[in-house]
Image (cartoon, rainbow, N blue to C red; front, side, top):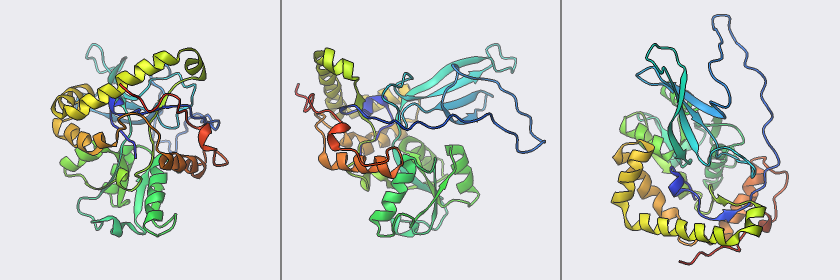
Length: 318
């Protein structure tokens, strides 16, 4: 499985992926009780595609923007997910200033369970409730794939779609969930805080799978192929450098992503081995992707392999 926390760790091959099914535009929010008051404090372009939010100890609002999940080929947003911060510019308590707190995130998935729960191993997951983001999401597919591999069928593990990390963590804390799927860095962080136990890296059960790839437009491929080749040579030289220099990489990304060094080190250890050294495609991974596009409802039929990737630039030699 190809997964990553950081943009430097993420995209390993040139591809053109097609997604003609875009989510429907949601209607305006509605209050479910007269005891609540609804007030708009921010809108596009200050904040787009939010998937989770929280207030920190200084009263600042932190909002996670998702820009990588089922990303259309013509998407004009940031290359990676980011955390936007809404704060009081003059300290008067009135939130009036946006800034980017952190960026460049890519999802890497762990399965986190209650620290005091009954789930001690994968075998204990049968018929248990596991939280995911949405029904037809990568997180849901991973849980179903785990269930299938255990011989329990598609529904051997109960999937509960609860959205944000905060919602899933709260539900697990209350005992409403036995665990949930979470990106690796947050999973390691919660484990260090004693709020959960990581029992599974999904890369261990979905060994042939690409979550992140490098995109190029048809026009770029046709008109500027040598520029792409130079970029790819630089990319894979960077991957080779990171493999050979763990201490430097961990120290650098600890500052860039603003996580503890112990967490960055764990993410490095679990993910660095998954990166291709030359970008060559794995036929088994392509077959998994083809079938997952139909399983997730992104496409109505399984696409032909050659329609979802381009191999004229790989393997990369430098």
